[in-house]
Image 1: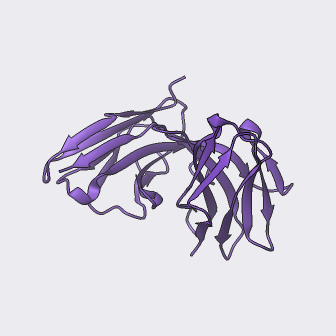
Image 2 (image 1 turned 90 degrees about the vertical axis):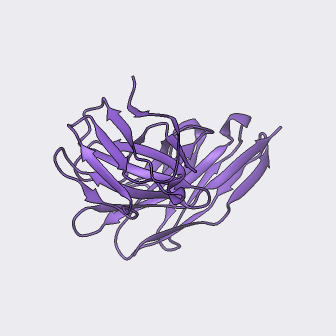
Length: 115
Length: 114
């Protein structure tokens, strides 16, 4: 069975500081990896995805993530955050389950950007 | 530019009442999903429909039923609501019949069961 662990439930940072949101996964097969963002009182939207190829993937709003197969990690980074980045961020892993892909979400990391 | 539309956005029920959450997508997607989101639990899949005419159970299907009315619409029904079903419900869709994980979400329906 696959699983996703987001190592921090809350991350407070100051505006213009760098941030890293950590995500580790476990799976016995090849995976696709995703980060979703949820702004207050909204649905989730895709931030970035890793399907294959380059292990460094860039997403919207200046975010990027690096797939590290040996460490089974997919950490999300941004060099300088804005107040508007305050949101909950979900890491997700997808792998083939025999009849369909199974998508598993982490429990989320609440990023709060303070002035 | 609507994407995935859910109704209602808010609902309060008494234990034992029934209700249906409606979802429609205008992106011509094949697959549709219902998730519930609870604090500290992430998102958990209730039911999904890989194509019109098919539905399958997800991780937490008990107490729910679904109908894929046509390619656009996928409804979630609570026949006899329980306080444990208090949650935020999200409908989502994806392009293919095989979902690699790229989903488009609605804005959610907040349900409270008293």
